Amino acid sequence: MRERILKILRGYDLNNVKIATLGSHSALNILRGAKDEGFETICICKNAEKDVYRNFGVADRLLEVESFGELLSKEIQEFLRNENAILIPHGSFNAYIGKFDSLEVPIFGNRKLMEYETSREKQREWLRKANVRVPKIFSSPDEIDRLCIVKYQGAKGGRGYFLASSPEDFRRKAESMVKKGLVTREEIKGAEIQEYVIGASVYFSFFYSPVNQRMELIALDRRYEHVDGIGRIPAEEQLKLQLEPTYTIIGNFPLVLRESLLSQAFQVADRIFEVSKEIAYPGMVGPFCIETVFTDKAELVVFEISARIVAGTNAGIPNSPYSYILFGENMYMGRRIAREIRIAIEKGMIEELIY
Ligand code: AMP
Ligand code: AMP
Image 1 (cartoon, rainbow, N blue to C red):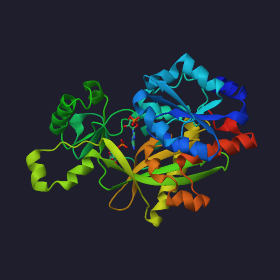
Image 2 (cartoon, rainbow, N blue to C red; image 1 turned 180 degrees about the horizontal axis):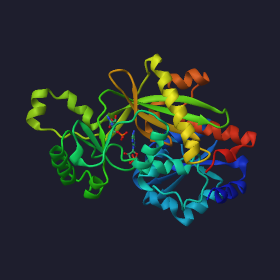
Image 3 (cartoon, helix red, strand yellow; image 1 turned 45 degrees about the vertical axis):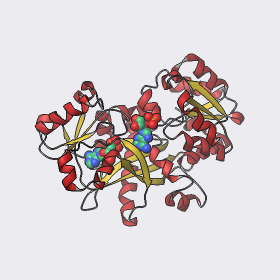
């Protein structure tokens, strides 16, 4: 597959590369970044969202589709190749497409690692090899003996996640989630039951740069989820209402970390990076996110990795404190991606970024 993609890339006019992505998730971030670095842009979007991308003026070309799955169609792939397009993947690629085998358009980043997001078992293996602290996993609901969080495969944005503290609790809530139409029975069967790590969650967005050969911390964020609304209701009312909050993502807050905690994150990022080379050579390229909780002892526990841009970096436009410290200018993940592509083209090393 890699050889086929490289062959396509070798046919590209590198003075005329365009940046393309699906219109959703972090597309405004990616497209604005591409324009800031002097690229023309293509946005593949659905009719309902067309106006968003037109109004913000970040897409030079809008390509309308019925569904994002159409990205795999012959016509769209051919169009993108003819435009010398490099695709920037984000959460919607995983959520709506998942497998990239039939996508014969150059992608920025390592598509093999992106597929790890669709399998929690594979992710766990990656984290285990990296020797980082992870939450305990329960292989069956019957084993639940403490507070757990129930999650599904793939980039679901917390939809239908719930907490359970016993096997009975699990069954009751699972049934309720299915009834509410938040998840399917199939998803419940394939769910991962993780120990709920009590602490402060932090999402670290790193960028591994083959051009600079360094690990860059671009931004931190935390999430704003359905469950966050519960805290506004007094405990007495909460008990009466028997609330069943879920973790559906609504937005993100930018964050800065106590400085003495940064070193733990860099150590973990380096170990995850080293293992990425073993499991999917040549390993991580570009943006990735380490999703963590800091415990009461301020120890970092990793519960997930995304090997792509995450939407939390949208809160870091035009810069996060960290990207500003690193670059001394406005820098954010969308722009960081485009900068890497631009310099790699100039230096004749674009093939190192494309899979
Ligand atoms: P969307 O195109 O908004 O449906 O997003 C694609 C996938 O990414 C969905 O599974 C969303 O739940 C997830 N997603 C979107 N925005 C965010 C966000 N800010 N944080 C985490 N996940 C997200
Ligand atoms: P995710 O979609 O996996 O990024 O997680 C959705 C939400 O669940 C976020 O608010 C996370 O902070 C939280 N979360 C996920 N896994 C755990 C865990 N093992 N312990 C505590 N919180 C978690």
